[in-house]
Image 1 (cartoon, rainbow, N blue to C red):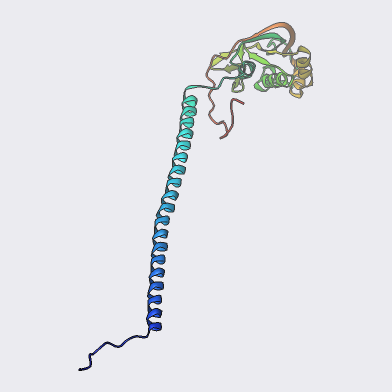
Image 2: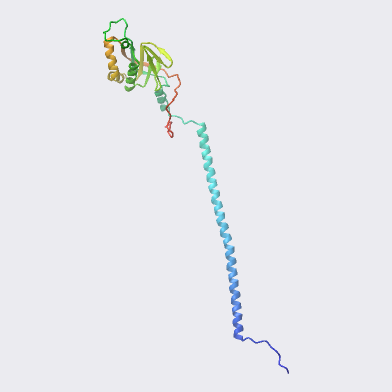
Length: 250
């Protein structure tokens, strides 16, 4: 009988070893595939959660911004339509100081007048010495303010911080009007303090010397009631302005 051809037989140990290796490799491949698949599944879930959290946080911030914007709009509308109310006492005080509020009270009446022209004068006296000058009126007004005057009038017109008057010869120009002597200044305030301020004024001390020498008119009277009307003109500031950031309602 002719011998039959057979394939080479592999030893059993080698076969078992190869089989074991193949099985182990399969297990490792499967495990690796599962691990890889699991990571791929987890990563999108974590990223989506992160996105969702950031979106929620963004929504919260937008809501907060809208709330703040609404509050700003409300405040802006209020500022555009409402003027802060002044304290009544402060409002009255400001009106008095500005001369825009009429007041009445005790005080002094000061009158200045030119010297009589028919009175014999010393040879050293010139005609200019016989008339009331602008600095004489300024001396009275400044002294009365220094003495605590709360309101003042000149020729019956309210004196304010912007009052400007000018004397040309013996004519007074005030608020667009012209006046001749006598010139009368009235001040509301403590009569004793006002009188003391007049007595202490150096310009008025010089004026009183001329009163004695040439007969210039000068009289001071205490009045129980002095009426100071409100200034009726327009207070316009040409050179002054309120500094930026100043709270004018404080």
